[in-house]
Length: 60
Image 1: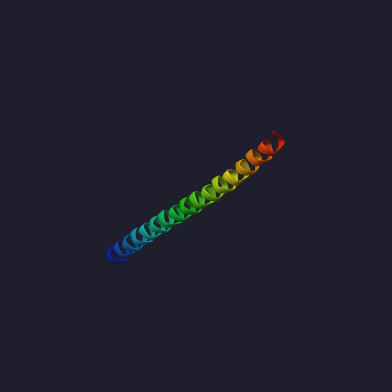
Image 2 (image 1 turned 90 degrees about the horizontal axis):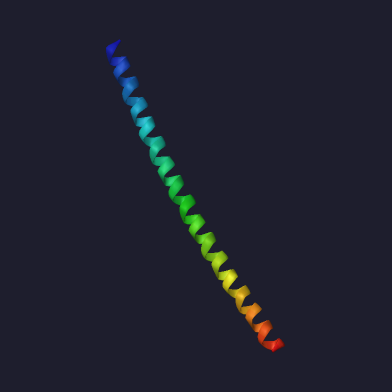
């Protein structure tokens, strides 16, 4: 009985460790995607500002 309980405890510990690793990997992927999205937004914003500046210089 004691051996079965020990095996169950070890299995639960391995499962918890695996779940923690999955959570960390998921968080890292989300962070990388957010950074990439922010870079694209900044790039598009820079383009928009350039177009805005160009339209003002045509009016002057």
